[in-house]
Every structure is written in C-alpha cells, then in structure tokens.
Length: 319
Image (cartoon, rainbow, N blue to C red):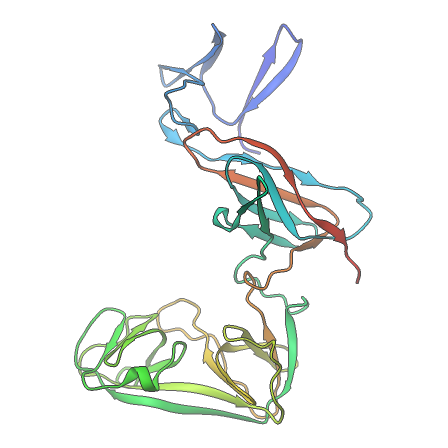
C-alpha cells in the first residue's frame, strides 16, 4: 500500500482526511492549509496555483467508485456517464472483465459526459461474442503483388523510381527484403514511388518482393466480416493476420507484425483449416461483464474540475 498522510481533528474527535502527498509538517491557519516540505513552506488551496501540483510536481486526480447493485447477479455494464464540467479517463475492472474509456471518447449529451465502455486494445479472448467462425478455407495462396530494386534510402520507407505502388500495393501487404531476408508491413501507400513501412528495412540498391495472402472459400462471405478484423485458424486457434480486402468468397490478409522491427507473428493457414475472425477490441466493444464494476477515473488538469456523480447503464447478463 502506498504511503499516505492521515489528518486528525481534535474538534471532531476523529480522523477526517487522507492525503496522497507526504509533508514533513502541516497546520491549518486562517482558513488555509500550510505544510512544510524539504524545509520550505507551502500554502494549499491558493487561487493562483495550478491544481494537481504538489511541491512543484504535477500529479493526477484519481477517483475510484464501485458499482455493486444486485451483487448476486451477473451484469453487463454498457456505459459510463459523468455529471460534471469535464471528461475523465476511465479504467474499468470487474471480477470477469476489463475495459477502458479515453477522455476523448466522452460526448456531452443533455448536460452529462457519456461514453460506451471499450474493451482494452489488443485484448484477445476467443470465448467472447466478438469471435465468430467463418468456415473451412478451400484455398490459401500467397502471391507476389510487386517487386523491384530500391533507388533511394529513406528511414521507414521503400522508395523506387518508376514504380506504380498506388495500383499494385495495399496497406497491410508484407515487404520481403530479398537482399538481407528482413520483413516489414506496409503502413501507407504514400505515392506511386514510395511506401511507408512499420520497420526500417530498405536501403538503396536492395531487392524486394511485396506479398499478399488470400483465403478462398466455397461460399460467399458474411457481410458482418470487415476489413481490420483479425483472422485465427485451427483447432487450437492460431493468429493468422488482419483482413485487408474482401471480395465475395475471397479474403486478403496481412500477416501481423508484433511491433518489433522485422518480426512477423502471424502465420498463414493451410487449405482446409477452420477460420475464425475477431472484431477490433475497441471499435466493436459491447461493455464489461461482471458481478460488480470498479471504475478508476483519472484527470490531469491543472485547472479546477468538478465531478458530482457517475452513472452506468446496466442490465442483467444471461449465459
């Protein structure tokens, strides 16, 4: 447990407050609180001082309410609403799930800041409703979409004069440096002659191929499947990649980078594998399930912020 300061009121005959800052001495006088730190005198609650600043260091304001109505029922917590004059960042924890809301996600509606609870980005749980089966893939093929030799060196770019990348290449395609066997993912098609990569692997005079993996099914694909969904396959689901294009019975996927330079963590499935798709954890969120919900609200403003109440739309969860 973090160290804190407790205050005792002789007038009230009890402990009245807990402070997260640690002064050497404190005293109340003339409606002001004074403390000493490192031999210096500080006056608190000054109208001219920045909020959330103690002894020259900026901190966050943190409020942690708990929702625990009907504690014997499993519930779905859909939203968070804030009655106040500013939005806060929210970290949500239940006994079964986690979630979050960035302060920019809140929208002012009828005098309250309102937002849906998002699941944590990158949180992959194949038992959740956002994981759905597609079916067995008939044919898996990896095709070379383009190739060549670079003509310039630019950090995190692939540059070749005379190319036509806007016609042949898509975001998510895999770049293989065939000179030194490094790999990267295309993050943007800047122009006909330049690509942005998630890793700095290309120098002038090096050769490359740009590949894409396609999955062909024996049936037309469900309209709910979207570009950006993540593909898993096999009896013990294995990460495949991210969908970059959809054409009736064909999915084009990008093998997935783990963010490290030149490291691809996705694996292409093989003919006959059962394919699942997983919706984006943030964009396709549906709340947090649990018997109770703890919400840690954080605000870093240096100006006065008011928070009067916090609410949530909750309904009973059925298995």
